[in-house]
View 1 (tube, one colour):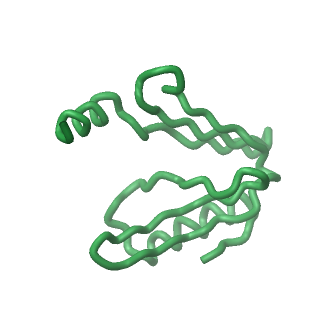
View 2 (tube, helix red, strand yellow):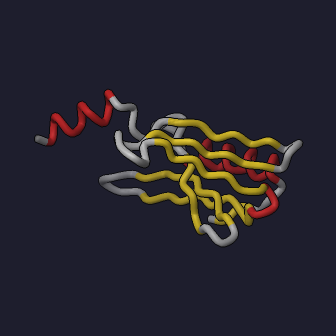
Length: 109
């Protein structure tokens, strides 16, 4: 059962998508594919001025977790997908700094 679930997740491309930052219009769009059904397409749109900060989360141990979040006013934390699972903490911080510089927001750790 678990293997069929994992294969379906891979075949349906669940979790993939894109982030679009349009500084000219001041709009951010986050698109993700979900499981087939009514809510397969997940699209979040909000204004750049509603982005409060970029948050970096590090959890070391058996299950290492390194995640970037965007903190959005009235929507909370939205995780940004990793581009490469093997990034060092320094590389994650550099990506966070680049994104924060582009969006003109502070970084939280």
